[in-house]
Amino acid sequence: MTEMNATTSEAERPDRETLLAFFAGSREPVSLEVAARLTGQLEAELYADARTDGRLAEPFATGDAALDWDEVAYLTIEAWPRTWLVNTLGAEAAVLPPYLRPVDVSVSLPIYVVVALHQQFESARTTAEARRGLTFHDYVARLLHLAIESETVDELRADSDFNEAYDYPHGGA
Image (cartoon, rainbow, N blue to C red):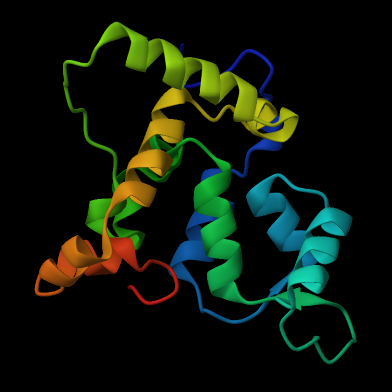
């Protein structure tokens, strides 16, 4: 499987300048229009989800709805393949915590585990995720993130790079 799914259009993904302006810019509330461009979601979908979950920011003076910067940062990071995001930012990927960057790891697993995880990935992946090109690697990274125990997080609290990435964007950088 490649990082770029055949069903994903490059035009749907935010360009480097948009990503850089967002991640390197101020942490002010973000319009639904900009959030939609960054996350690949529809404005109406973002609004409905945020309204349902109580995650809308204070509206702009114009009355237009907004989302908090950290919410849009989280959605943007989760929306796109991590490798694509870092490669697109290139040398400017330093706007993200260093430990958010993907690293290749080689592990030996029983075949049944890999088969089962691939099946879960295909079953759990939404049409929107497939369209954005999220990969099996992204899926496994999410599972592994969720597997990190709170005791481990507590033990690593002295590691500022770990904390910056683990808590990002809600508490890091």
